Image (cartoon, rainbow, N blue to C red; front, side):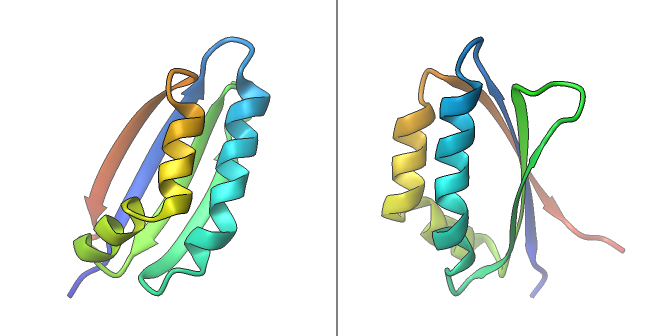
Length: 95
């Protein structure tokens, strides 16, 4: 079974960078502790401090579905709802 890589780009609306960053930072430790998580890293764009990138790797689609159902992930969604634009790419490694 191949792993599932997720690249989530989160761009905070004007003036909401601190709120969005704080919410993103809170979700990292419990996400890393999940059984299906192989990688969960938060980054900030050097050219745009309102843009954050979460690099994730999961044991597969089911592990990601379980993650998305956790209380900490649901709290993140509630915290940044309306405060950021989110784009998620789900990737399968080919080589």
